Image (cartoon, rainbow, N blue to C red; front, side):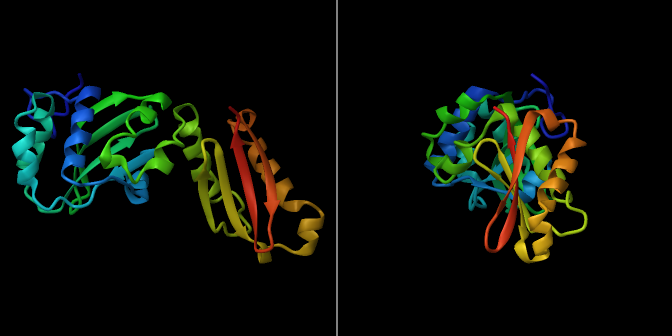
Length: 232
């Protein structure tokens, strides 16, 4: 397996899929839980990024890791960290690779201890772990096939309507991206002439991924929703 010599001594290799099961089991046994982190998702350019609460006592984990050969890299990294601001993490990148490890929240530096390729079925198989108890709505909606494109569209939609400000852009379900804008930014003439949809249509038509989506605009009393759906 690929070695990360910057973080792990040369004699240790990255852990894999089976080791991740032990990683989750131990974290859950110590009553820590993963939550979604938008900050680290954006900062590290992950599609999804999850972190635990700050670890109160790293020694309690070292006492367990040292007896797990498959987690030797976790034991080594955690033992070398010189800070009390430590959390555990795992994330999925645009290559559908799940990476997990230890995060220094003071320096914002992530120390990868394991990685492996994942698919949609894999996430359904790990929901039994206590450490993932707060992630049901995120993990059940992960779609590896479309996930990279969804994040790309979400990022690009943040600035797509140049003359008006987007309120926020969110991913909903397994294949929908929704950009929200305040209704009062549009005139009655804009609405009657279908201008919002025409702007969306022109914008999507210039994208390389145009043939992989369909789209529409939904109007409510308070806002307009620009909706793009990735074709299954």
